[in-house]
Length: 511
Image 1 (cartoon, helix red, strand yellow):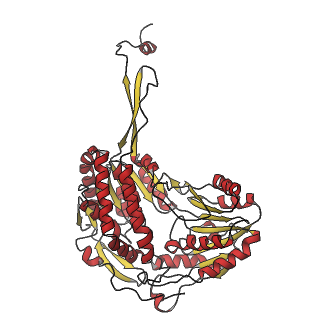
Image 2 (cartoon, rainbow, N blue to C red):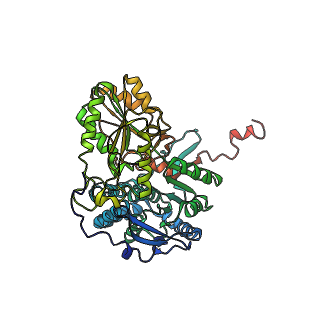
């Protein structure tokens, strides 16, 4: 289906809001100095909504210098002071929620209902969570572990964090990078994707308006090759956090390793969706459509490989295809739209290429084409279900990052779990069964950072997000994220007041 209604005319006024530039350094917006410009394009229409000056290496240097200057003061604030400021930040963002939702939908093409009901409230909740978590940065409690000494553990901020966020969830990824870093007392320079900088810039401005000091949060909007690599390699950046493709993550790791930085990587995924023969078939079909199509499939945890035990296979294929055909493509700002465009025509064409090549070895059950008519000018692609592909085929092995679900059958539970694990990735997965023992086995044996049971996609601020294998390492969200953004220091006090200690004799002198 398409064209569910007319779009509202009140779109986010990007040109007016970012007239001062698309960089945010030391508490104020500014223009990039690379000498090159870039256009933010509405993927629903192909129209440019903002042309801005890209950041160059000099802008990265200024941002890092601002973060470095702000670090001692911010690190010295008490956990309670940081918590209070973050609570104010959550309130400011809540007041501006509609602005954030419209900016996110404009630059990404995601339906306004997704921005309003998922991206923005999820981000506000993240801020509120870290406002509380800032007060809980304890180390191990003190104790006399050697008998003659008292030991305790301090958690200390690392310094300046240089983070790179992707284009699929610009607001949420900015929050996932920024919040644990600053809650722990670090300062940060974030490079958003140059396709989608709008909500990262709004986020930094809202933080400043809430009272977070100048220089604690800085945004540089430039290319990965220039601004991104310079940020990762900068000698004053103590840690890098990157979310994006595994291929680019390898390059980030190479650069970060040269300066021995702390490194956190959240990379690609190819999530399995394992349906056992005792599953509720209607729930599984609904879950597959929602899990595969969220954010037009541009989600590294999206359901991409459905493995269905043979007794349910044909029913699952038919029901999932039927549900996909009810999904309404349309303008992201139209109230009835379910599915918006992909982020760009380049990404749409990449997805189409995977599907077109699959026709030679698999069955395209539904979808597999761009819509015609009014939507043809946008980067739209119909929800697509592919069946009967081989396990070693391209659509099963590669990350497509679009509204495409591949379905394969399996016979035994052993086979289903083995197929789920037959991937270089390990970010997320789901298991569908009404047998608690069967489901529990799947959660133990599937190698992924998150395994849902009888659902696929929900995330919560209190729980960690991160992967196994080629999906990277380290965690976003939750208290576990502080493991990425703090240094652990052991402090040891002598309790004896004895000058010549017994252990000294192992180095000099006699007993």
